[in-house]
Amino acid sequence: MGDQRKVSREELEKAAGQDQPDFQNCDLSSLDLGGADLKGVNLSRANLRGANLRGANLKEAYFLQADLTEADLREADLEGAILWEANLSRANLEGAKVELPTLAASILTGATMPDGTVHD
Image 1 (cartoon, rainbow, N blue to C red):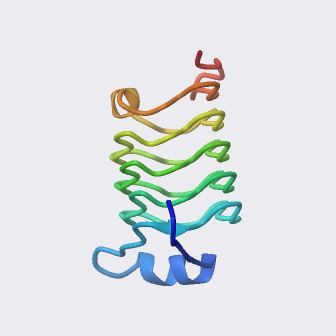
Image 2 (cartoon, rainbow, N blue to C red; image 1 turned 30 degrees about the vertical axis):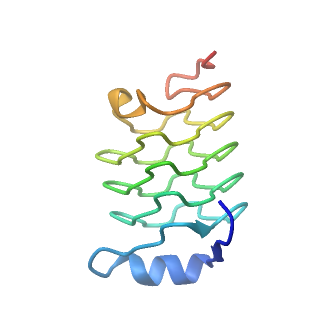
Image 3 (spheres, rainbow, N blue to C red; image 1 turned 90 degrees about the vertical axis):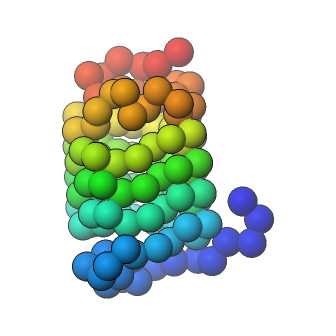
């Protein structure tokens, strides 16, 4: 993930209301985004390792090849989100609204699924 620009919650939320907010390749690791409204934000190839996204609105957001290792996605709304080839290893998706087929090409090793089961 090399040279990634560090982004703040304020910067993300301000841009979220704009047309096609783009935060590809950004560093959001360990950021507290709990309850944030990030609908439609492009976070492809972003580093979200350990980020708190609990209860966040992530509808229609793009997470192509994003690193969500150990991210807290409990109760997050991921309806219509694109998670193609995202790394969700050890992430917590318990209670999240997500269409399971969108996770098919994602890495889910040790992830807690929406129903509370842990993926192999």
